[in-house]
Image (tube, rainbow, N blue to C red; front, side, top):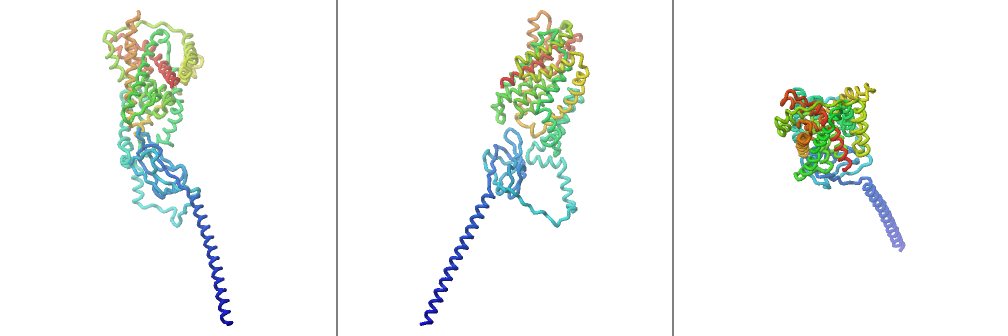
Length: 525
């Protein structure tokens, strides 16, 4: 009996201990489950993932990241190229690890398409490598390979495999730069412009040099002087200091020729909009206005207007404007001969009257006043132009006038030419829109020359005093090259026919006309 009671008590004690053990296990399991869930929640909050999507339709030309790689905010993930030929870097906005990444070279991806997943990490811990000697040299083969990879030849081959503009395209643009140097040095076509532009083109296409890329010398010159519009305004001031308004004041009706030559600007504006029907070309009205101003053959005005209306096309427009200014001796004579007869080219014009100093001093002030009242948007160009001219004509600030005419404008011309040449980089220049701009620029310049000649022919018919139609070609703003070309063509027809001073009238009025046209476009758009 006692033994059975002891057994019952032992059984009850064992059962109680078992129950306590089960309760304790349940508590431990609950604690572990709670800790596990807490850890999962913490991991989810600390390892937040975001999708990486394409910002626009583009083709990949270089991939700089790979899956499982740790990237930092600002790191370049890839280099893309859109349908218009514009290149841009695809950068990380936050730091983390790429847990998914599917960008591949030369593949096209659509806007909004997910191309990767980044696990965000507020803190990235990297193990410091130890045990290796800090003075240990790589293998000789690796050093030779690194030396080869740093050469321009290797960069051309490697770049051509990704995008032809990075390989063969660079060679094409270096050849273009050498041609510009040849024209400037051998044939002396505007050497002050073509020599720095051509050399800048060669520099900007040297592989791996990066002179025209962010961080490069030419990049900062371009951003400081051209993007801001400082260089063209200083050039305008220098041109004003070298301009003589006497021929225009002596024969005011020739100013109409400067206005007629601006017809090409507005005609080409419509032509640029018409090109939108071609795949790969998409010009807005502001783009078309910037392209049209090339017809004035006034580089500073073209740069100033495009920097305000269409900065993305500024490089191509500047190249076209200055190239056609330099090629005036090639472009204009055939048009002038086509539209005039031998008899018209032989017309001798009467001697111009004397223009007093008082007239020359009052003229820039009157023009600036009219600009302030009627077209303030053109005041930066007109104001700097008239200030330079006033400094020359007033006769009391000769030191300032000499500085503006010589050291200042020469210094700015150097940097202007190099920075414009930097935009001849193959990756930026070799696209369909640039070709369209060059063609339209040629048409605008040719139309401006033709309308000036035709207006001069009409004036010759209506005027009592003879007017040689050739001087109408000087209505474009290429000062003084256009006037020199007119004089040369006139001398070919008649060795006694000196048209230089007569052509300077429409030439300087063309400068004012192109600035007014730019002001009108700025005010309207």
